[in-house]
Amino acid sequence: MANNTRFLILLGPPMSGKGTQAARLSQLLGIPQISSGDLFRENIKNQTDLGREAKKYIEQGDLVPDQVTIGMVANRLQEKDCRSGALLDGFPRTLAQAEALDAILEDLGARLSAVISIDVPEDSLVERASGRRICRSCGQSYHLVFNPPREMDTCDQDGGELYQREDDKPETVRQRLAVYQTQTSPLIAYYKSRGILREVNGDQPIEVVGEVITRMVNEI
Ligand code: ADP
Ligand code: ADP
Image (cartoon, rainbow, N blue to C red; front, side, top):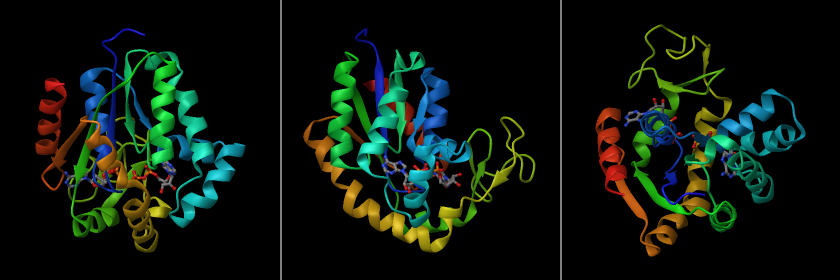
């Protein structure tokens, strides 16, 4: 694989804006957004064995086991459209996944360009959860107040129906935030120690966060 590939991670707690910013960057850089959550939801919709396995964990707000998750993402990264790079949104979420990612990229002859860590205080995350709506067909996320669709309940991109994810209900969100603290937040120090972490204050309007991230990416 050529040296000018770009593999970037968007790291942050649930609701920090990973998906929103990954979709924006994907358009800007012309590389695919790979969201492990979207891949799981796709498998659940298609009633695959992987979907059935993942559903049990997702409903509880827990992480899907590493083995299942790593295999799914590894397969996706081997597809042709990832030859020039990819934006990883929601993966890795554990140290074991981070180590597996290094091995997957090495096999592809590539390496990580940067990890963008989006920081948002917990109060804002909880507020965002209640208003998030997702497109059933393309997975694009909206917010009733902060990023409303042009037409009620309809995706701007493809006209798909917008719905509220079952795991965005308050109780499950609390569990997901706790899981983030214990299992995922150690990745911040892990990538910082490797000198590839870039931190952005995600508690600003979507466009402002987007501009900061664009500047960061251009500096890499
Ligand atoms: P994640 O993928 O990290 O879970 P999303 O990108 O889906 O987060 O964003 C979570 C919710 O918050 C969505 O409803 C989205 O429209 C909204 N959102 C994203 N970024 C911001 C922001 N900077 N300010 C306010 N709301 C935001
Ligand atoms: P959010 O965008 O709010 O951060 P995601 O759509 O990324 O949520 O993930 C939804 C759920 O899918 C998670 O709560 C978890 O159960 C599962 N999941 C997604 N990515 C991973 C991962 N890398 N490892 C384990 N489980 C995951």
